[in-house]
Image 1 (tube, rainbow, N blue to C red):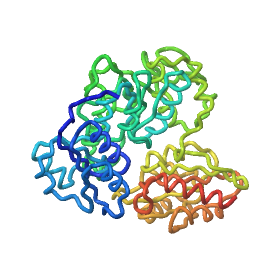
Image 2 (tube, helix red, strand yellow; image 1 turned 90 degrees about the horizontal axis):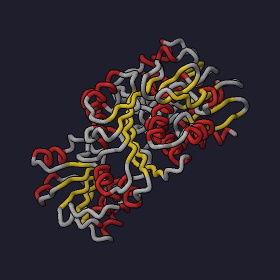
Image 3 (cartoon, rainbow, N blue to C red; image 1 turned 180 degrees about the vertical axis):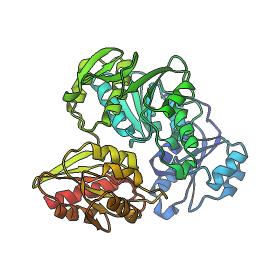
Image 4 (spheres, helix red, strand yellow; image 1 turned 120 degrees about the vertical axis):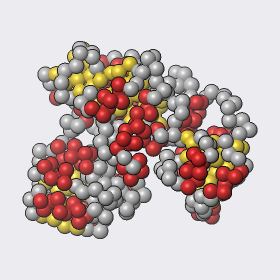
Length: 450
């Protein structure tokens, strides 16, 4: 960890706890800052805040009072999930107090370079693939970010011999000032999180922040099949490395005659790749490009691609119960992810879907439901999904209270050879704290059947 002194004796407000806030507050305290933590959860129900208080950090819990800013803070480190229309954030911006996320802190203290991955879909799979390829290639990678480990915590332990592979959300990227990955990846861009960002352009601008501090010494791996991602690339100073699943490229990663290629070099037969789903070829191409740029040889890349079958909650194979194969795709929190999941199967599908209502309809799903023989819905969007299911001609429908109850109902509709797929097309927050909780409940319910 770099011993920086830029925060010494500065008054800093850490807004919102969870893992990232606790780590950021502890790090800033270690760097000599005068830290105040503010979290909405009451102190008596807040073990994280209680622990920070024991270490001499000031904590204010129960609300986000705007009057806090009168204490003269020089910086705010914001939990990524707190929107910018939060009254404290709005007031801080008006007073020209900088607002960052803890990813910025990670970039400032890390001795290790970063491979940063963002995009609408495929971030977790791509991040895991890059990590596994670097690991197989002996590059001593560490994994961090939106995938579950706090970046500024990982950065404290990293050395110059490591590489930090970091998954980055648009929420995190809005709060960076100097963060600069050696290699950046943008997997794809589709409408998402518009309830947070307001417009597609704002969302795109947040994603573009991954490359805003890159120079010609760094690399930007970008989806050449999308105009939005290529538009971001045109505004970058980095060396552009495109990837495409639709055409051969003169440079970058692409598919040709049943093989994956990088810069004209044949790397591996597609038929030997273990990870299912054509959409995953985007993730594989971008991860391979990052690995090749990091000096990983083809044998290590092939070793990973022959054995890697996916990450938890992303088209994860769970079990075979009396000839029915169960898959957990709880991380499918938007329509595109569910479309990609459905495209991965030729067998008849019983689809479990539903969740948080963000105001959108689901008509884009209709052309992809032709292989769905039964639809089990739950959550706030159940009625909307039932409507598109009827339009698509699905004859078997049932609405249930939750995922746990959906599993035995789905089994009742199924026959040997069918796929039972949890792919909600919605966020989980109407019923579950995270998509991981939702997926774990699905897995547990499947095992109850066994």
